[in-house]
Amino acid sequence: MVTSAPTVTLLDPPIDLSKDHHGPPASSSYTSYISLDTSKPRYFQNPWPSYRSASLNDAWLAYQKGAAIAYAQTHSIPPKRISSGASNHDDEEALLEVEADVEEIPKIRRVKSRVYVRPSFSEIRDEDEEDDWRDPPVTVVAPKWEKTEKETVTWLGHASVLARIPWEDKSKEGMCGLLFDPIFSYRCSPSQYVGPARHLDPPCSVSELPEIHACFISHDHYDHLDYYTILDLWKYHAATIHFFVPYGLKKWFESCSIPSDRITEFDWWHEALLSFPPSSTSPSSDSSDGLMLKVAFTPAQHRSGRGVLDHMTTLWGSWVVGVVSPSDVGRAQERGMNVWQGFKMFFGGDTGYRYATSPTQDPLSICPAFTQIASLYSPFSLSCLPISTGSSLPFLRTLLSLSLDQYTLTSALHCSPADAISIHRILGAERGLGIHWGTFCDPDEARGTRVEFGRVRRSAGLGTKWDEKGCFVVCDIGQTMEFEPFNSG
Ligand SMILES: [Zn+2]
Image 1 (tube, protein in one colour):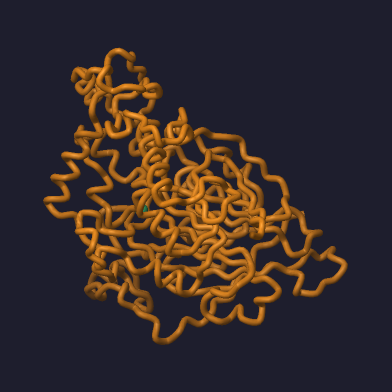
Image 2: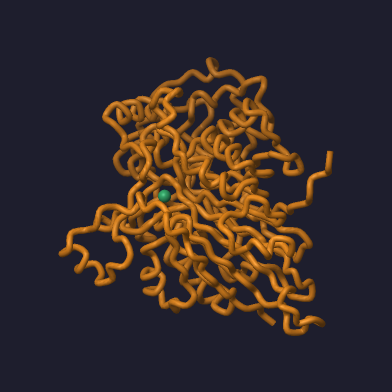
């Protein structure tokens, strides 16, 4: 027997809620062309001074750093091509002609088959941990969907995460499935013929996922909102699934033939309660046996747009989901979740933290949203945070043969590992999971992310093991981790 979709109750937002992320109204002719519905904003903006467009100087720095990243490896280790329809090998061949002496790079034991190598990572430092240099940096493992007593989290590759919550009513089958930014397609692109392609497969198909009750979308970029994945989710999980989407995206989901009562659109800081009834076979049919969750759509510093004409016309953001434990039912309607006892998670989706080329003492270069989120919802049991630019600009490299360092160019929109660690600490998360990396990029880029993450995590003094309080980990695609409580003391 399948369980049912949640009942969603929107909570009234405070009347004095800031609307400074709503852009100026679109011109009337544009508005009437796009939609007759003028009750919701048609345009959005990042309201903070930390959101800055890349300057010419940033572009120059990105070019210089990118050229260094595309440093050619030596001939002494014969290059082996990996087959990918996405890459144009001409530029790689040109780079291979550049001579590099392997003798000058001692202990280079892992790099063997690719052209793009980050030189700062080509020398393993004494303090580096073996795990930072794992080869391959990411693997895909077959997920196990056992019913457990505790919450679990599974990384499904890129930014896709599945969290599973045990039912209050233990006689109920399976677990409550919360899916974030799912992508199962080969490419994150408007077309499955061109665009950034996977280097690693998803760990399973959409039909092999356990029951999904809520699907949360952070924004409409192709690597976070995938048309074929959404169609498959509706095809295989129609009995249970409800979609939670940013303002402006409901009509996109309706165009996928998903009924409007299964889609809820959120503005920043809006909250809702999700309730699941207890099993009808439960000995007591008391509704307090049902599971209740609270959901909040929170800000992120990012952008939106899938085509040429729709930039910033739908909202972007992050999600907070918390379990309303029996002791917190009385305050479930109140704003925030600070003092709650139940499991609480933050899903960052895709976000920037600070404008990287500004001086470190410039407080305005840091996005203030995470402190605001923490003031309402921390501490968290889990933070899922992006640790890499992901697949944002690889077409520049593959199509234009231009090597640009994506982080230098897009730091206002994307987190580096150090940025993610800063957010993790602001949020006061007991455990962190690195996402948005290692999937739509080649193994060298993934290794670069893994090594940099390991180094900044070490200098920040954060735990590396899942059972250490305050830990921040990266894992394999398909790997599931369970939320065992920490030993007290
Ligand atoms: Zn994005």
